[in-house]
Amino acid sequence: MMKMLQKLKIALIQLSVCEEKTTNLNRVKDFVQEAVNKGAQLIALPECFNSPYGNKYFRKYAESIPGETSELMSKLAKHHKIHLVAGSIPEKYENDYYNTCLVFDTDGKLLTKFRKIHLFDIDIPGKMQFKESETLKPGYNLSTFNISNIKFGLGICYDLRFPELALLYRKHGCHVLLYPGAFNLVTGPCHWELLIRSRALDNQVYCAAISPARSADSDYKAYGHTLISDPWGKIIGQTDEKEGIVYSAIDMDYLKEVREQIPVSKQKRNDIYNVTGPLYIHTPCVFKFNSFIHYMSAKILRKLKLALIQLNISDNKLDNFKKVANYVKEAARSGSALIILPEFCCNPYSNTYYKNHGEAIPGNLFYFLSDVAKQNKVFLVAGSIPEKYNGYFYATSLAFNLNGQLLAQFRKIHLFDVNIPNKLIFNESSKIKSGNQIVTFNMYNIKIGLGRCYDLRFPEMAILYRKLGCHLLLYPSAFSYVTGPPHWELLLRARALDNQVYCAGVSSAADNNPAGHTTFGHSLVTDPWGKVIAKTDEKESILYSEIDMDYLEEVRQQMPLSNQKRGDLYSLEYYDVADPEAPFYSIP
Image 1: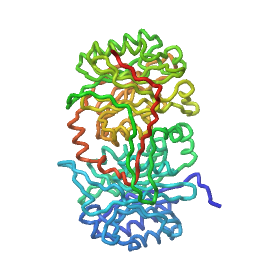
Image 2: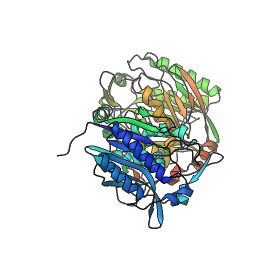
Image 3: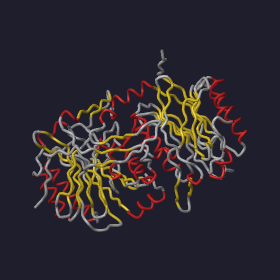
Image 4: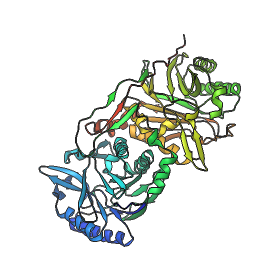
């Protein structure tokens, strides 16, 4: 009978790599012995631990498997009775070369082999140019392995930038993701921690990334900073750029607790989207998009000034109306062409307010918002209103053009049902019904995708929007003081970076909410590089920012992630679940 593990101690070895393979392998032996002495049950090594990282080294240091390095790793695992993840080595197979990770069990048996799927081909002028594909071939298999009841998924370095891979591993039951990686001094400070934490948080897994140490003598300067994040997106182990070992533990009880408190896996809308892809086999797949609501207009903009209005919402609808009108006027006079209001912009956020504040569309609030857009000659996104339709309530966002015409109507897709004992309990599905469609609209040449608050936790939506050509994602929200501090900025930055889009999250202010739900505030905008370019605090205010289409195109050209996705290995399908009874209203 298989022994069930509740905790597993792991060691991540950040090794200094030189041009002498024998020296590198001897250093591995020493560090493995040190980690074993500290009680490590699983030990992971960095990318290219037996050779320097670089195209001029891959062929020179490449080995067949089995070979010198793989045989030594097998012996170390067997001798110390550990599981050993041999980060990666340059592998020679027939006439091709691969960047390959090997995993050995406590008997020295090879459990699995993973070849790097997404090759590191980027061109950031004056900073970083690299093209792994000049020497290496990509792998075609996803790989998992088990230590008792704990399931692991593997990726290598640049694979970390592709959220579909992590989503697929989670779907196949993984609890831990391991990414041996050698990020550099250009991308490392900006993205390393963000990507690791977001993969952990999005998929509610432990995520560890193991880097080589930084060496002043090497051609390629590794960032270092090996780290591990828990399923809450919190860093639980980290080092600096120097050689060393990071110790941590996989706690299955805690993982289970996180997944029960915020059950995103059960809340995914597989009736709308589905990540598919095989493990271990190579099967062609394609992205499918059957239908989506898309409203557009024509004109060319290179820059767009936007305003996020962080409102203090009261339970007096008329007072809220006046405040919205005044703030929109102020933002318009400041030159903002697109203005976004927070979630529930004219009533407090609470299940108790739907009945009294809910309206049919079109209704008083609808016509008021249309008139505000028209009077100020702005595009206006009303974060959400409680919509009453056919006996149900929806949390509905509305977008109007500068003539007051309705461009888009989006109903919140993922409802906020969480249970964090003694901190936060909310059951949105007890009062409102979920929407069934993703929605985009065009502000001239700039394509905008809509989501709402809890939708931000589901990376599939953002991936779909990027595939549909969006440049900007908007998330009117009301994150709480429980989840806001650890997750709000992390999620917004991750959606922007993963999909190379601008991403704006607009919150209501954190002043006293008459409904008792105190929001986090901190509206912010992040650019396609994952950098926060505008941010406010918790108080009522207007946050101004700018969308720069030239910069967005530059980022996408320098690191062409969209072109590098492996549609032959994974796909994200979108299904037509349109509600034929849901009307779309326009202003005459």
